[in-house]
Image (cartoon, rainbow, N blue to C red):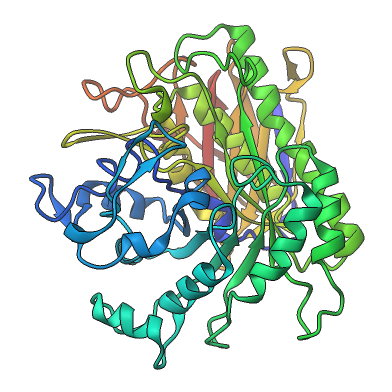
Amino acid sequence: MATIHIDPTRPRSRIAPEIYGHFSEHLGRCIYEGIFVGPDSAIPNENGIRRDVTQALRKIRVPVLRWPGGCFADEYHWQDGVGPRESRKRMVNTHWGGVLEDNSFGTHEYFELCRQLGCKTYVNGNVGSGTVREMSEWVEYMTFGGLSPMAELRAKNGHEAPWRLDYFGVGNENWGCGGNMTPSYYADLYRRYQTYVRQYDPGAPIARICGGPNADDVNWTRTVLETCFASPHPDGAHGYMDGLSLHYYVHPGGWDHKGSATAFSDTEYYATMKKALHMEDLIAMHSAVMDGFDPEKKIGLMVDEWGAWYDVEPGTEPGFLYQQNTMRDALVAAVTLNIFNGHSDRVRLACIAQMVNVLQSVILTEGPRMLLTPTYHVFHMYRDHQGARLLDAEVEGAGAVDGGLPAIHASASLAEDGTVTVTAANLSLTHGQDVTIRLRGVPTARGEGSVLTGDVHSHNTFDRPDAVREKKLDVTSVGPAVTIHMPACSVAAVQLR
């Protein structure tokens, strides 16, 4: 029997809601068909955006949405995506399938989507194939409220008032698809480009996100910070950035043979979980470098691309990265979000890749039909962590699986109203566990919760959309503790009051 010890009298760092963010790229059927169907579609929509998708996303409290990429960002020219849709310039999406991009979803449509979701905005600018002027004018177009050429163009295109731009990424993966740059070259470019991310409204500052490393490349982190972190900065701010990105994908067989999303062995499952838990090591190693420049942790580590990446589903376009989503992915999401919670003193934003129909998505669509994936349910179960204060969750007596992986992986938080939320994953494929959650210094604990479980290969299909779904969890209270049963291969969330 395992015990999770929690002391609600010792809250730690605030868990930024943006840790539970999402990513939408012009890739496959993420934007088109998945989110945007156009105002003339027979699929119910609001201003061209699918109602079923936005209704589902609002239930998980999407806090921030990153767009337009990804690799697509560094070939995207924003002026192609504004103005009357019928006259917008068409292009070839060279990164993802070589398909036609008609730019019918652009800046105005993105901000409309964020309005419908009630979330913050995160736009990635083009450094790889764009110019400083292009980036500067895009920021002006989006955020300037006075008289200017770009503000006038925005009004002409139907939106007189400026939008709120919360985050702006200066390039994407510039070590790879964003230009194959060296860290020193990118660092010099970043300093130049970020200069023109003008802060037109002091009351609504734009957080500048510097392109960070690929997985464990600490040399990139160190080199970029040496050039781009200046203390004190001439304008009194903390360097030339507000955040440093980090990208990491879980693929059990390696990049060349990533493996099937649904047909995998127990050995492949445990290899996947080992790689998911490696996120802890990555955050620790990059945080250590950042601490050397920024011991006060003013700069956020922004894990703005993460998730499981498998081979595409048989018969689908390889460049569309469409994959199914099983209980294995639910456990990947659960442990990753637990890790982000545990490092919320440095991790300020994270975006799962991607929102709909691509990689580890939370929603799949097929024509007018939509389903929620097991990963969606994890985000729903974890939603009460957003904005709460981290609590230490010490797991005792749970044992290990597959040569050292923790059988029970957990995190906890304290909300302003005193509610303690505990989320846990049972990584074992064969053994369920009774788990006692014990609150220190509390005479009586009462709780309720939900559980997500099934065979590790279980997934939802359009014929069986509820094969994997949340169910009510039995919670037994005895004094300052509650006990739950966690089946093998399960995720649980408990709210204690």
